[in-house]
Image (cartoon, rainbow, N blue to C red; front, side, top):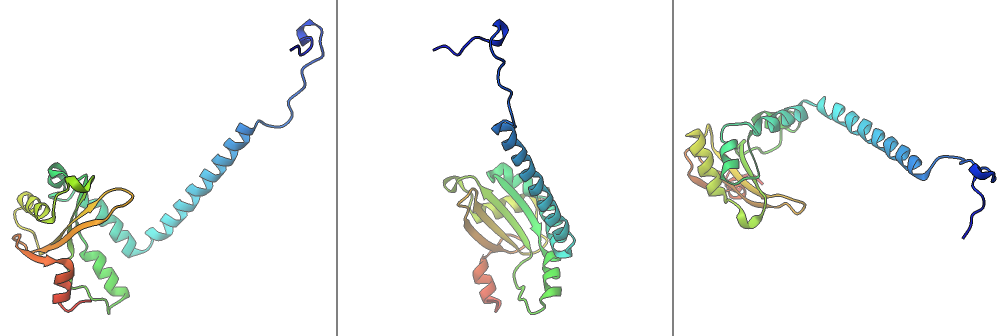
Length: 179
């Protein structure tokens, strides 16, 4: 198959490319969509962070990762762990909805496990937390969740300050007259 004489040997000049390549256009579209996404998320985060309840919850979540007992929970097998005192966030909820029943403990000791078969149970989470801190400052909820897209709660149990099992969170709320 011959295509003619090349331009270097006296043939006709190669046709000029007109317009941009498809790759370059795709690149511009993706960069534009990325910029819109960043601006949208940034704007939403700015307005959300102005809300004191959201700001308090975000701060509590950041502190939870480094709270006493969290490192020990990760060493015991939690892929992610946190100890979160939700007291301030609960107070912010009460300011907006005073009729809300908040008979649940405000201290949550959370463990997220990579796979359900390898998981710790709530009793192990409570024992690990108490071994790290000595005595809890108040009754607390130990909870274990599986990680991933199909994440689900594996257990949620309330314990006293010294580690006595008081029942599932649902049982404790029901006994306190909550819904």
